Length: 318
Image 1: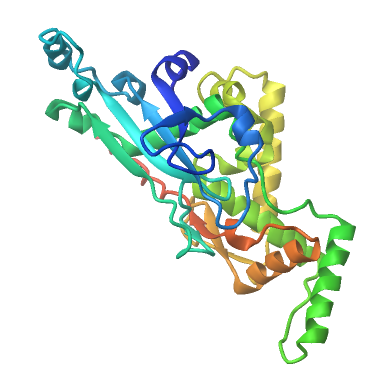
Image 2 (image 1 turned 135 degrees about the horizontal axis):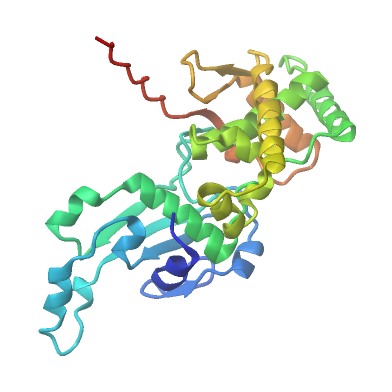
């Protein structure tokens, strides 16, 4: 994981392009915490252009190129094309700067990342790790603009929110009597919201403790809290036990989600699952019934963690 010193000296996140700050195509402006705070993060069709830049190979666990550094001495003016730099052009859309595994808006979501490596020698190629680059981008987002992964577009479940949903669906049934709209039970509506949040975590973190992070959201509050959790977790045993307890509650809750809402994978140890068409409809109606200006485009309808490595076979003693 990148340290705060590395992030401060060797990384940056900027606006780029012409929207939303009317930035000329050949210029960029720092993307700040105030900028992020002021965004309408879940507006449909609103893509905020972002540029992630890393100028130090060690930040990406790549060795420096000594030959390259020596070459610079032959020029009166430093040659920028020789400098190591990784740039990632992407967008912030539905509060994600990546395209999820399988979302309900596959065709309209153009949020693919463009990754450019500059000043890389051949002997450095074997050290390129795209997954680690993605991890560092998350740390950059937390550090530079206070990224809030835990935000969701839907309101918290309450009896009033449920009543609003039922009222909305009842109105749809009255206007469209030939369409068999189904009204969810409270249990089904709760399960739907639990499932969509769970898949949001699995889509990003895979098998890397998504239930721990979902159960203790404060670990993702800022860069420092995430850094301490990820690499220097010296929390008291009482805190660790409480964290595990919350994660176990999430696991139990997910295991009890009915199959008509979300199906889970049969492979042991693989996190994730797939929402049903019924659950997607419930979610749409929950947003609409509560006058939420957002829509279901944030929804990840299928996510899966990495398949765990096979257990190491013990050698037979002779």
